[in-house]
Every structure is written in structure tokens, then in C-alpha cells.
Length: 294
Image (cartoon, rainbow, N blue to C red; front, side):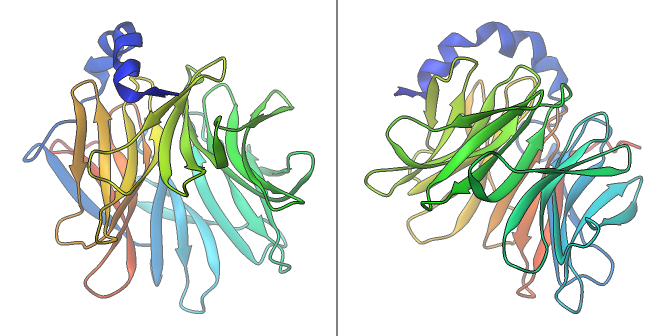
């Protein structure tokens, strides 16, 4: 399997064409961090962000019920699949289509896409548990599912056709993010039980992504410029964020947080995720440029 260094040699044109779009990349003090909390929530995570700055994610209310949300122009809209006991919203494209997962009380998870106010269930053939993680502007959806033998696979749903995604040599694969160039990022576990991020291109060739010094790396989101956001664990078990650019890895943490998990990134380089606060609760965050966007 190729490494991320080979990827840098193969995508110079993509980097050059779209680098100007990535306005929020770089190091402090250009970056700002904003906490995202659903009103009255005890748990919030930002999971996806589009180029309009619309954020989707998850929050739990005071009773412990799990919901999805859309944050648009500073206003939260709670998202619940009709009849579901749990809803999670995980990805959003520039058309406003939202993907995620839901449960109906039996512990079985189903994927969904919310389009034009209508929910549609997503379950790959042979699946017993499904999570839809991201959607691009061509309405291609990626995620992962468990089969009846307990094996976890990534999947791509493209025009009603399901494609199973397994990293060669991996015993577990999850597909977490996709961009409009059909570049897919995710996570796999090898036969030595080590976790790695990956980038998968059109024909299924995989590039491993490992933050130097990490004991586990997971790639969660990719934008059109090819910037990849994700998380990594250090030897002490602390979780940190990373951004992979043409210049290499930038690692970061929400200020003062012991654990930081980035999930989604848009074409402007804005990143959303979750962090562990000093109050012991998980909060969502937006990492962006110093210049605000309305």
C-alpha cells in the first residue's frame, strides 16, 4: 500500500488549482475557535460543514435523548427521523442534503439522507447496522456497515448502486468523507490491530495516512482542494486534531481541551468537530479564519 508521501507527488495539479480556496488553513494566530452547543444540551458535536457555513451535528438533551441538528445563520434546527428514538446528523453538501443515522429502539442503526424535507433510509444489501457519514454535491454518499458476521465495511452509494469499500489488508474499514472529485477518506484497522487513516481514489487504490508519532490515525473529512481533517491518538491516549495540507501535517487542539476530534471540513478550510471541556462534557467547535463569514 502507498503512503501519504506518494499522494503528494500524484496530486500536484489538484493542490495548485484549489489552494487559493483554502482560506482558513495555516497556523495561529490566523485561526479562531468557536464553541457550538445546542441549547439545553449535555453533549454536542459538529460533524459536517458546507461552503455556506451551515453546520450539522449531534446533540443530547437533558433527558439523554439523541438528536441531529442543523446550525444556519446562528439558529439551531433539531432534526429527528420520524419514529426514531435516536437521530445523528453527520454530513451536509452545498445543496443542503443531510446524511446520518437513526435507531428505532432496537439498537439497530440505519443510514438516512434528508433531501427536500423527506427522509430516505440507506441500508446496503446484507447490512445489519449502517452509518451514512458524508455526501458530496453529486449526491454520492459514503459510510460504513456491519454484515451478519460482524465484519465492518465501508460503502459508497452512487446513483442507487452500492459499492463495498475495503482497504486491502484491513480487517475493518470505515468510509468517513468524500469530495466532489470522488476522493474518499476513512479509517482501517490492520491485522496487527493498529488503526490508520486512508485516502481512496477512483479505482480503489488506497494511500495510508498516519500522523507521525501517533498510535492511531483516523481521516474524517476531505474538501475539493484535497485538504484532509481527522484525529490521532498519542501514546498517552489523548486525542488530537490534524489537518493534512501540501506542506504536511498540522496538529491542533481546541484551546485548553485534553481531547479534540475534528470531523468535517469545507472548501474554505473551516473545520467542525467536538472537544472535551473542563466541565467534563463534549462540546462542538468551529475552527475558522479570523475573518468572520455571514
